[in-house]
Length: 288
Figure (tube, rainbow, N blue to C red):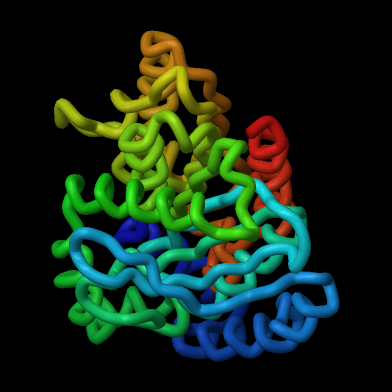
């Protein structure tokens, strides 16, 4: 997941482009605004969007909900990366909704702050960003992730734009790759497909390590960054063994891109491999 290891790799990549993090953050934010899937473009594509509130046992979770303007659709829960819900993920949610899904991009930091906590993932690697985010990260517990998942599913099932007769997909990035797996374990009857994009902490010694929670009730896409694989080369094997042992269908693949390659405002964003990862997730979402 995002840490000093991935920061070093990203800083080298940015240096090769003659940029520092602050310069890149400004450029990426401007690029998303200029070329990204704007609210106007979403409306022209036949999408409806709104800022919503999901009641949970721990309070009110703010979220961004976007879906086709007509009909009932399969729902996807989008957990943003360690930087939280922000413009990049708003754009990514619109892009996924344009494929025919009702997408709820959630603020997993709602216990501490409304979104956005930061405007770009580059802020996480600044001292100020880490000081702001670390207490928020610590406030999220495994029971909290599980109760949030149940509340999110209940909220989605009550929406007119959602086809509650179909199962739900859940996807997470970086830190929240594990959240998507835990969500499927918490609501096995409703979440039927999981995508973890450059997910962190998937294989640990803990009895409830995410890799031990994969179930036959869902299909799993585990998309691994090449530099994460270099650091923990046995994780992919542990994941494959766990999926097989637990009877879960899974596709576990190392991509030719570094940690963070699927996130629009990330220094490691890699359009071709991000598109390939998205196509894999769509293949499994189509079966919901």
